[in-house]
Length: 94
Image (cartoon, rainbow, N blue to C red; front, side):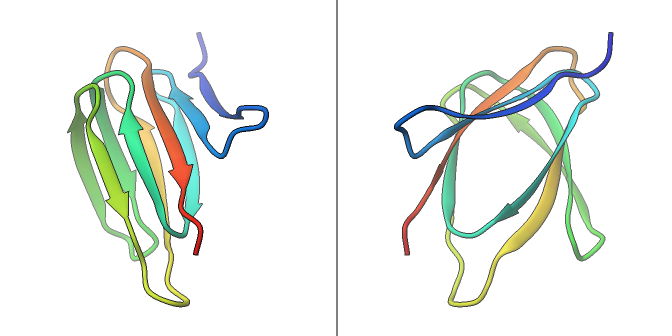
């Protein structure tokens, strides 16, 4: 079965649900946002500067990412676990 990678924008909402199946990869280019885990799991992210980082998530883990004027982050998230990884992403207005 191929990896599942879904990024859905809910109607009339300022948030997205991110679902990544085992082995799946989603690419991101973010300004300010926060991300909350819906499920737990393990992931690896690769960043534009060539670095990589592995992270273990638990449900309700929340990351707040804020950047200065003209700054942003480009990275991906690769599900290296055995189950689907789900997050809720909410962009922040500047």
